[in-house]
Length: 139
Image (cartoon, rainbow, N blue to C red):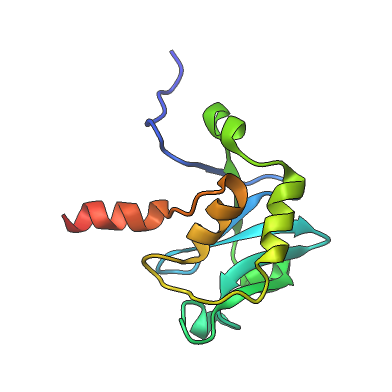
């Protein structure tokens, strides 16, 4: 029998990156998320550098090189389930949403972080699995 997947468990893989993909990179403490828009460019909600990545004062939705986004660390790509693929927006709409958000601030690590941003672009709904898992551990 095949391996059983945990229901609603996100899958992440290492593969060729395509436009509209959700990317993540492990920063050492948490994962940082972005949307790949092609031409080695990523749109993500972040501060200008690693030391201020989650700084609410300086974080905005920004476009950076893939190299800047990855910080020299391995990248993972979201592997969507069939159910997610049905709910997911088109690549064109994902990139359009991400580009229309450039310069937007209001970063909040609990309620409006980089993972909320990418899920809003892809699904039209802001959520953070990382924060939800943290909440479950605290309870």
